[in-house]
Length: 141
Length: 141
DNA sequence: CGCTCAGATGATCAAGATTCTCATTTCTAT
DNA sequence: ATAGAAATGAGAATCTTGATCATCTGAGCG
Ligand SMILES: [Mn+2]
Ligand SMILES: [Mn+2]
Ligand SMILES: [Zn+2]
Ligand SMILES: [Zn+2]
Image (cartoon, rainbow over all chains, first blue to last red; front, side):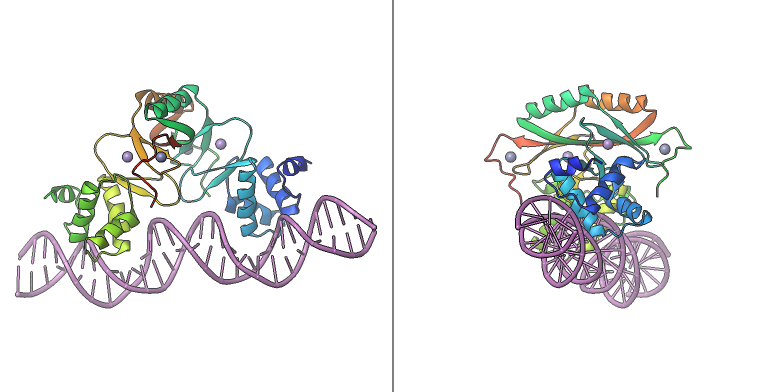
């Protein structure tokens, strides 16, 4: 088990936290809403409350284990922190999410911020378009 | 009057729509929440409901008169559509919002999307940082 | 192994943002 | 001015997320 991640983060190793982490690690969908995680827990027979899912995800975020994104709609999505920063492309048709990292964009962002006298700390970049690859498997729920 | 914009958009010219458009045109703050607009209406003595503000803003957005952004927090902000696309920098300290347009970033976005087989239709880019210029006038509400 | 208690959980309630409902009012066109 | 269609306002409803608080659980200790 990788309960070590929890311990390292200063979080007590509890059943809900382990199960939520496991779902984040093993789900074929990288970007999950709190409700999607909650549903997977129910399906696997775990009696974990939705409030706990939100609470734990917020704690995971604060601990640097996951990051929270707003890709579309009103629900935040969460993904395991796997070291490198990246941004996202979302398909308007089917909801598929692809990841990318572009050093040119990253550098220009820093330069633009500097031009305006800002010290940039973070950024949010999402591209929206059509994946020209239907039938794609990521149909909306 | 510029009720022509409303007529052109196929929207009936009503008092709430004119007043809301006027606030968007004359407010010294370019990016306004629905509630901020609602408050300005109250202060100027207009008896317009918050639901109407939201409804009208959504219609303006559909008509291409305004665009809706999510800069921070949970409230959307609206700004008059003035022709050119641009992105935003937000100060984490004081909430100041600056606008920018960078052709290099725009081009790289298209190229990245193409690499992934996407036809890009839109994007959302917000930089977060510290404007090193306090005392700035844009103090949070 | 069983005890203890700080910390975690779950059920429910609450809050904030936005939309919906529907009776009433206002435009636009005669 | 009149009528019909569309818009408005008040409040209820919805959706997502966070707060409360009584109960439960896990890590350390004997
Ligand atoms: Mn990702
Ligand atoms: Mn702007
Ligand atoms: Zn697709
Ligand atoms: Zn500032």
